[in-house]
Image 1 (tube, rainbow, N blue to C red):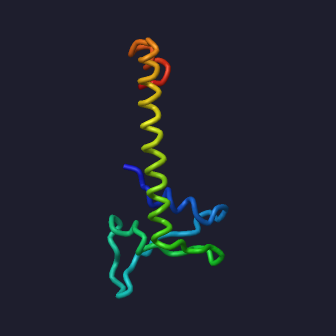
Image 2: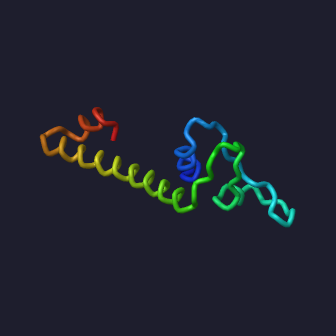
Length: 99
């Protein structure tokens, strides 16, 4: 499964490598389990010159990435169908586009 949160975060603060990381402890000092740390609420800045994007901006970027991915799938299916409609066989289409 893709980590859309980190893919989205990579679209912010371009050129600032490792500008963010994840909290390891809650405000009360209790440890945050590793499987619960990778969320917007646990995001911290590693770079004082970086800007923390809003959760709404991050969520919008996540949706943009998912929509772009879905668009690729849709266009691939459409292209495959057009090739079949032109008379290519399934085998020929598969050889061309790998699907």
